[in-house]
Length: 40
Image 1 (cartoon, one colour):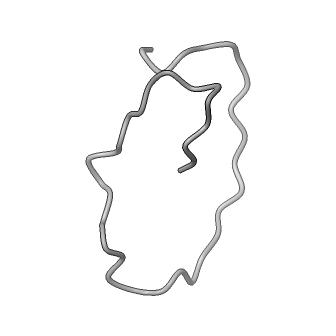
Image 2 (tube, rainbow, N blue to C red):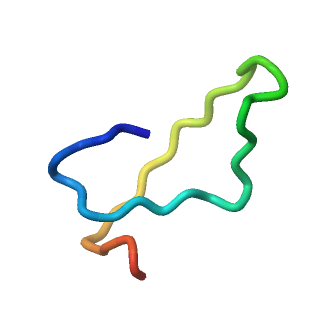
Image 3 (cartoon, rainbow, N blue to C red):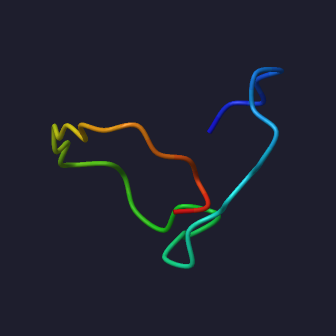
């Protein structure tokens, strides 16, 4: 997550683990098509 001046909202997932309890071993590439905001 970045702290961008272009964003006015921060929505943290309830599935977030902080601090991370294991190393990253898988990356999943995905694409979302459409114009929507964080509220939807």
